[in-house]
Length: 406
Image (cartoon, rainbow, N blue to C red; front, side, top):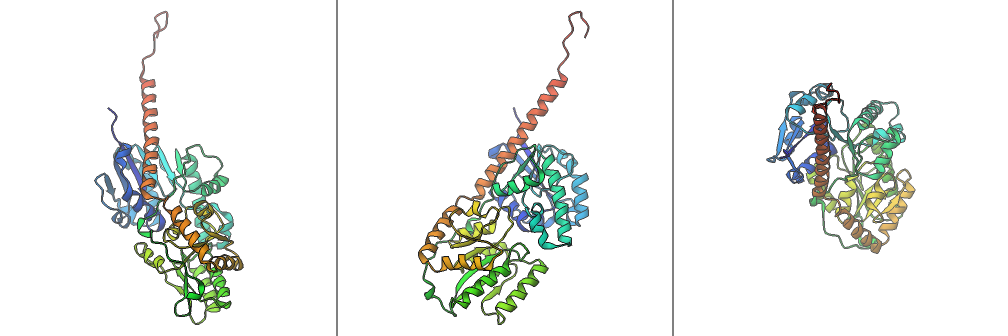
């Protein structure tokens, strides 16, 4: 009788942001026993493990090093994780963080950060600590991807970008997109003409994302300012944490375009559990990033029943399809053109909002969890069968020769 599988997950360097959100949603939707996995062992820091819902099959383990600095976490992963995985009886190690240098096999990793592989985007940071960090990640993740038994990608566009740097990979490279939390699904709003809005009741454009060099919030501010000069009563809500140099650039643009603070509202970081409330107050969703792996924020905007104006870069057209109006995120005039096209036509807004909402329904965390654990189980089973085959071959007695000599 074949024994159930045990999967280990390395969350040593997943502490905040999209990596932790992925773990929360993936494990919350998973039913790994359906794929023949009896236990999932996860190693992580206190904060990461506390964010994960307790499940009967989930074995949370907390080495003290994982609450310390990056050096201690890296050394633990390099020298102790493989031994811990074997001691826990793991058949496979899943490394969603993308970097791994231990000796455990088989290993399945994941590409969730495209920025290290887009040199054109890295140039926006100049010679900075961020650039050096991203170049280091480019090296460590490229090395991990080449050595891994499989690498999970989130979109076809992201896979193509990574492979341009790494070259062909020896392991399998499936595409398994993230899912969407159902609380972001909202009824579609009735679309009114722009003349139904005024200064005290403006048409609200929302852009949720970290303030960063490749997110182009300052270009968005300039685009909305141009439409306001044409007499359109618009307000812009910007939501997200900030990279300090990019925030300084944004504030300079706001001071120039909206010196009295009448229509640009920067809300800062908002808890993931509260984001849907802000989408519910908006009339139009905007996404202006030029570098994405899997744009979860775009999915949330689509699900909120909003018409979407979107960057034409990376995987955005792959995700949104023909359900949005696209623009060049580095040209304020083109952003303004896309906004004008949508806002001027309630019928177009209604059509695009319905189409984007329908497209968002395809991105489900249960599907993501089933595909992910199904794939992990397949890799683990093949590795187990290969190991058994090797053992049987090596232990099979040699046949005696014809003359009786062995």
